[in-house]
Length: 303
Image (cartoon, rainbow, N blue to C red; front, side, top):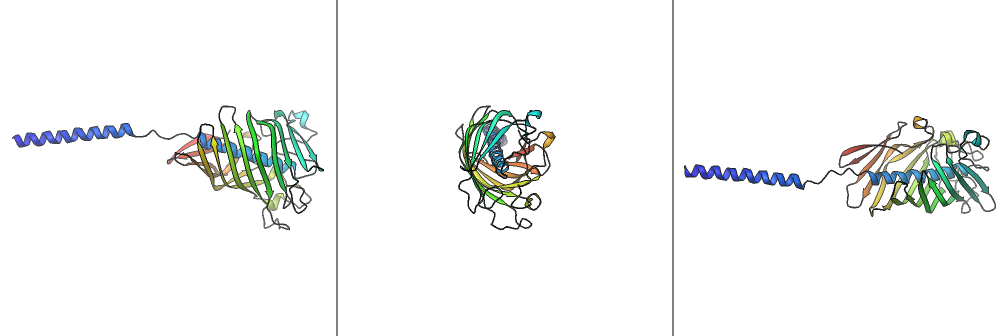
C-alpha cells in the first residue's frame, strides 16, 4: 500500500514538473518577427535609384532631352498642369540638368530640386544613353521626392553593350553603381549602396538604330545585382536580387502613371535578424508585393 502511494506521488510530481517546464517554454518563446520596415526601406531605395536612372536615360537619349514617362512634351506641360521639370543640355560641358518645379510628375510623384547628369567620361564617341561606352555621372542638389530628401553621394551609369551589337540578338546593358541617402518624410533614413546591371529586355522592339532614341514608354527593363546599407535605427543590411526585378513601362496600375517593379525577388538580410524575401510577383500589373519572414508571408502595397 505504501509502495502504491509512493508511486502515485512520484507520478504526480513528474506531471507537475512537466507542466511547469512546458509553461516556462511557452513563456520563453520569442515573439513572431513581423518587421517588414527594413525590406520596405530597401524597396524605397531601389525604386528611387531606378527612377533617377530612368530619367537620365530618357533625358540623354536625344539631343533636346525629354522625360517621356515622367513629363509631357514642352508644348503640353502648362495646359495639363504637369510642368514637372525643365531640361537643359549643355554640349560644351557635356551636362544635362533636370530642374524640377515642385509640381506633380506624370508618375504621380511630386519632385523638387536639381539632378545633373554629366557624360564627359563617355568613350567610343558615345553621346546618347543608347550608345555603347556612354557614361552618366550623377549629382543632385536639394532633390526631394514626395517629401523624401534624396542625397546622391555618387552614382555612375555605364552602357556596357558591345560596340556594333546586333539588337535582334543582343539586349542593351548598363552597369549601375550608386551611394545614396534617403531621409524619409515619415521619419528615419536609409543609406544605400548598390552594384547593379540593367538590361533592356525588349531591345529588339524598342531600339530602332543608333540614330533614334529608344522607345522608352514601351520599354521593359530588368535589374540584377546586390546592395548594402545602414538604417537610422543602426540596423545594417545586405540585399541580393535572387530573381531579376522587372519594370514594364507599359504597365501603370490603376492609371496612376507609375511603373513599379512587377516581377522578381530580393533577399533582405538585416543584422541579427532572419533574412526577409521581398517578392514583387510574377508580372501582373499591380502594386502588390509580399515580404516573407521565417516562412510567414506579409502582404504589402507598394507606395
